[in-house]
Length: 187
Image 1: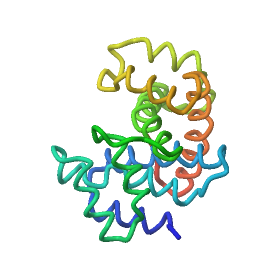
Image 2: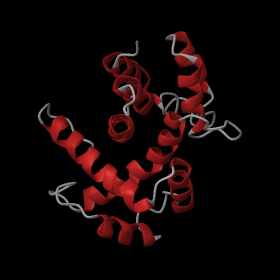
Image 3: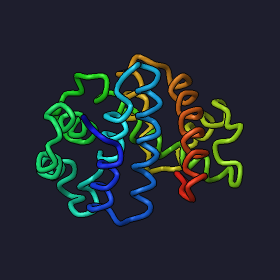
Image 4: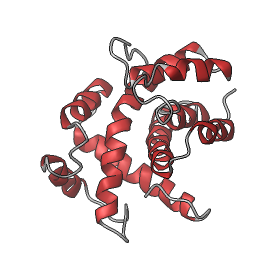
């Protein structure tokens, strides 16, 4: 059985950048949101979100291929590893719901954090789908986020962009409140 806290410890062994740790926490929030919606294993999906970039800091040019060795050494199962590979490796099919959700959450959670940061100090509080979509149409805002990949990923999940944004507003907002009680933040 996968434990969220073990995944967090493994991530912190391999990632020191506060920015990358926060990104992984944001993707974890998205993954947990969809685990709950779909009745899936919350800890497993949380661990996938946390560990999707476990190799990125040390091996950015080889990401996500180096994660295979890291995760196998920790006895993560092949499907878990394949789901992580599918978010960034060419030619790895996303043939499970967890893989599709990770792909859809990776870039969009980064975009959602950018939207929340410009709303400081309100963050996710009272965030509206229409305001996020307005920012999404502005190619100059968070320009590193591929709108095309984000939209294609949502379609792979069988959702509309509006549905995905709404789910992430709720899930990430809830997780931000939880983290704030411990002195941590997605932002």
